[in-house]
Amino acid sequence: MVKHQPLQVYEKQVFVSFVTGIYGCRWKRYQRSQDDSSRWECTWFVILCSSFLLLLFWAYFWLVAQNDFNEFNWLVYNRSGEWRDETIPILASTTVGFSYITFLLVMVPALDHFSIYSLGQQLNLYWVHKIGVLATLLTTISGVISVDDVWGDEWDILLVSLQSTAPFLHIGALVTVTAISWLVAGYVVRRERSTGQNVMMLLIYMVILLVVYLVPLTFTCPCIMDRHSLGARPDIIGRRGAPMLAPENTMVSFNRALQYGASSLEADVTISVDGFPFLMRDRTLKRTTDVHKVFPGRRYDDASFFNWTEIRSLNAGQWFLESDPYWTVETLTARERSRIGNQTVCSLVEMLRLVVRANGSALLNVRRPPPEHPRHRSWFMDTLWAVQKAGISQTRVTWTPDTDRGRVRGLQQTANEKLSVEEIRQRGITSLTLHYSKASHKDIQEYLANNVSVTVYPVNEPWLYSILWCSGVPSVSSDAPQVLRKVPYPIWLMSQNAYNFIWITSDLVSIAVVIGTFCFQKWRMRGMQTYNPEQIMLSAVARRSSRDVNIMKEKLIFSDLNNGLGSTEELCLYPENGYATYSHGDLGH
Image 1: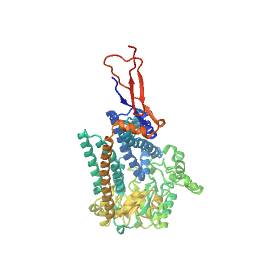
Image 2 (image 1 turned 60 degrees about the vertical axis):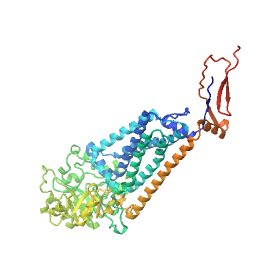
Image 3 (image 1 turned 90 degrees about the vertical axis):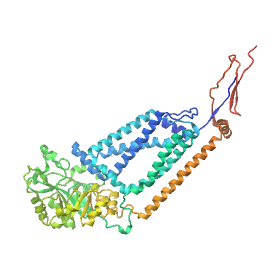
Image 4 (image 1 turned 120 degrees about the vertical axis):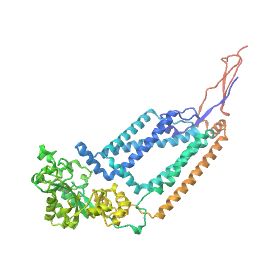
């Protein structure tokens, strides 16, 4: 007895060979298979998807955290004692990891599409990719843990950024979920016998769709407003001058800030051992001066324990040229580099006199000397002396902290913590200086309604400046006035009616596409089920010449109930009908 089996005909598919080769290192053609991928391979697919989502979150975090890169490097410096741009290796590794995972994930829909409908290929991730995916996942998790330890407060920027990006992220999520309907529909329509799995898959997908459709109800976006309600452009305060263009808290830095449109200047004030106020952000002089050369044994001493003569002898600009902390030194002219290289530590009097000439105002962050310091009790009078000596009106000077309120006469004091309106009135202050994560749109509106001025810091990116502008903030403190100068108008502004129209229209289009996709997949699958494998094979042979078709012979199964087969068996191949058969010849009896 002879059994006949059809020959399998494989058309050349360069694209599919490339995809299966890259994804699973399967460069050779394999027999057609209707089996699903193993649970182990499905587990790796879940790990791949999880890695992509985590990296997407990680990349988005660092994208919006650009506003605070200076703060991050400063925090790392306080821990390590070395100043360097730690964001570069993080951004490089994130870009490489995200690109790699995205590349693998993009190949899955293509591979899955061809495997289901034409080629019978399974989702088998190559072991090298498994190691790469696992290494990327573990590296990202360790990065998240490290940032949470060093920079845990920065997670707040994610919620703040959604005030600007939520409408656009919603459109992106809507497009993605709608596109996934092709895969979901294909999975459902080809598994007619697995009713329970179909119901579960559809239920999960429909819940996700519903969430994406309705999530705009939770958005709070200040820039969704009427254009006529937009307030005046917030004033820009040069925070330590323009520290990305020149050494922070130096005269050249303050001059650059004024050149780029800053209406006020902010500085960190420290009191020397002989009672002279000077400008220094760090507790020590190590990072921003050459104290290690002039006073090698005192490089770790508190800056307030130096006298003014010693402080004035230090160079406060050469470190900027040598370390290039913001990658801006190459943009400077030779004259500008020479001027920066000769900078000394700036005194408070010099900075205030510059403010007077610019007809601006000043915001001072005064650091009170430690208890063992000889000026611990007289720091206030030392600061007041500098203000008077500079000849600036006391109403144009605001400082923190808001202590010794009874001793302040004429000076403006601001609190750098979030307070209720009642507490603000009790303290007798009229302004707040808040971190952007503490200044919600609702709080800002309440403060302004009670005649409390609000300054928000640090604001270095156009998106953050735009949402604060829409919120009605009067002024912002920025390390990058040169960037905010290029924002003459909020980066986007939309009326509530216009956004509602876009939102509802997008949802309706998505619903129509999803329904159409499911109907098309059902129709397509029914069409495929009307053909048996032999018809599909014969059609493929008829469409192509023999030179363009690769024929793989499957093993023929023979069974002889009475006698063994002789040596005169003859294989007959009939390419015209796609069958192979053996005929039994005469064995001589």
